[in-house]
Length: 448
Image (cartoon, rainbow, N blue to C red; front, side):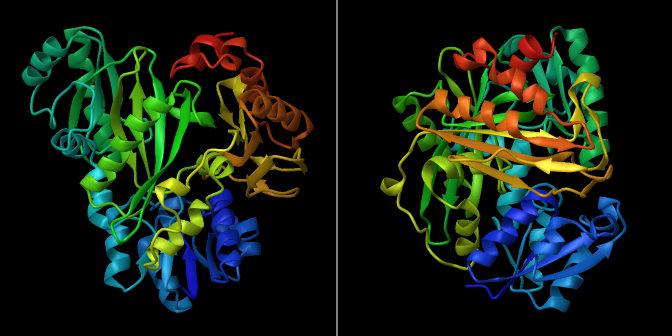
């Protein structure tokens, strides 16, 4: 096992990883920007090092600065968390070059699954269902128009190197497709430094279902069940559940086998999430694989009892999985609400400022992952996520009721948060009935 691990992240996920390291008896090393000197993750770590100015590109994305600290601190491994450098194959390769274990998949797996059109080609070759579309990147407008005519409108133009819902455009007609191609290419070049795009059939109001997988270096791959991630705004998830009200045991078996097949197709190791869209007929299609720990991993931990972060660390250290597939049992239901420092009433405008009061509703079956406390300052430089509140129940109804109670008791003052939005979702009749899809918020909650 490792003796010392650097956490190349900030906020709630850095806190989460540092706590796991402490429980494993591993010395934790935090890094921080000028803006985060007094942050909770810095306070909790055994050691902490400054890596640069507030801007992420000069600190949390500064590979040379992080590697320099890793050498200075004498760490065995680096855990990247999510975001920042977590899905950067160059960073994973640099860690390997310097003899530092990257707690995640190898650079090749990250690159192959991060390049969306390449991942799609790999899935087709390995008989994992994919949405009808181009097998690779689009070379010209004529090819795009021909393929769109073949599969039928509407279609999606997607960045080949994309992720996080960026670099995507929808087209309902040939003229719209021409405009969408140009716009998606510009955005893809601007955000990802790669203008390549590909085409997919647009599915109307599908569900977004993802499967958590774990794979060790001995070739063992298991799944931890699915999460319902359909509640999104601009393709950014807001509320997740484990399991999904739409997935039967039969469908779960088919999708989980596809997820495992996807991981094996790229010799995947560590924790990963295979994401699918499911249409109204129960057909499912691979859309991407996230090669890192997910924001919503606590929901899965609540129903399985598996500590995914500790498993990540053990796998990276060369240990076999602690579990076999038959050991994984699903107990009850879990719901996770992402609490952001944003104002839903003002088009989700970020709400930086100082937290003057921070009290979370607690009690049986409640988990809070957070990087804030009273006195914390929410900076404008980073993602607005301040906490994840997770509730467990013996069934979905109890988990929902518990979440309503916990949110009513939670007091975060000094900044605006998305708690009122979550309360509105939880009381919606269609949500309570499990009748949700990827446009649910726009069609049922935000339209008012």
